[in-house]
Amino acid sequence: MNTFLFSSSGTRSSILITILSVFLSSFALASSLTEPVPTKLQTIETLLTANSTEIGLEPTAIKKSHTYSADKKITLVTDHWQPFYGPDLDQGGYIIEICKAAFAATGYELTVKFMPWKRATKAVSRGIYDGLLGAYYTAERAKYLYYSQALAKEKTSLIALKSRNLSYKSNADLSGYTIGVMRAAVNDTNLDNNVRLSFSYANDASHNLQKLMAGRIDYMITGEAHLSYLVKHNQSANKKVEMSALQVFKPAIKVNPIYITVRKARNNSAGLVAAFNKGIDIIKKNGEYAQIKHKHLSSLNMPNNALPLLDFFQRIDIVAR
Image (cartoon, rainbow, N blue to C red; front, side):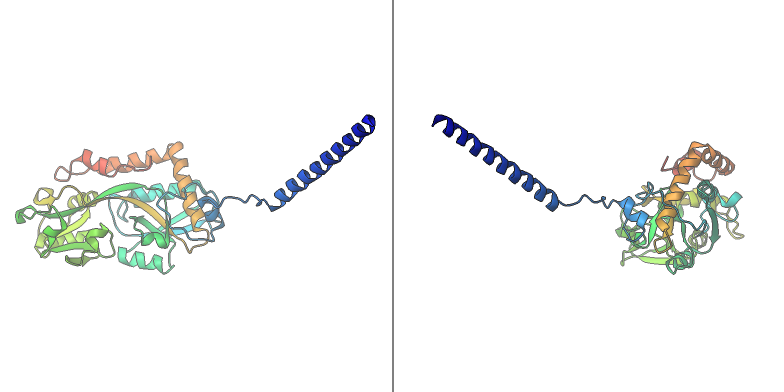
């Protein structure tokens, strides 16, 4: 009896263990079948590589993407904005020579065309050219343009004649006066969109400087480095502009980094910007970047009546080292 019971009990235990093992194995299999299959994370980089989704990116956000365009030619448009770039400067200026070298380092050929800024922005938005060179960042532009890493920076400031004894502490101080600005330029959105202010538009800052000297406008807005260049190269037959006659109000309205941009609608636009960013890294490492910078900055030879040379160098120093 005792032997039978022991034997029977052992059999039952074996059966129970077998059933339990089968059940657990089945459960594990079912769980593995219902568990979601891991998928590749949809990072910014993978989305841009696919180039199928437009993403509102802040500048430099796509610099790690390395899927470049098969089209090896790119055309950017810009305005005259010396000492950064201009048709009268050696190799088109500091920024243009840097940009051409960066694109060349990754196998691209850059062509730059000059035209008034308003015409340039319209031509790019209509798809006539690939992008803008020397653009400031705005959320509106970022809807249809990809931005590179920053190349330089410019202090955007309010300027008046000292003889007028005008003041500026807030935008309210500008009410009732006429402010000269460049067509389609972005200075500071809070000021640009202020409907209580009166603006006078010109194709370039040089024209606004002439209007300021003639008393046709009360203030003008432009970059300080560009203003220094205009003062040095002023060719007005009627009245020579001296920096000592101008009031540059502090602090600056805004410090604007300078970028290149590429239309998102262009084939593999993100890849082009990524190639450019990679090219900047290459020419920084091989020394070409420093050579170009030194050549241009040492040749500017800013005059004594312009802003102090050291301050000038600091204002146009590189943002993204």
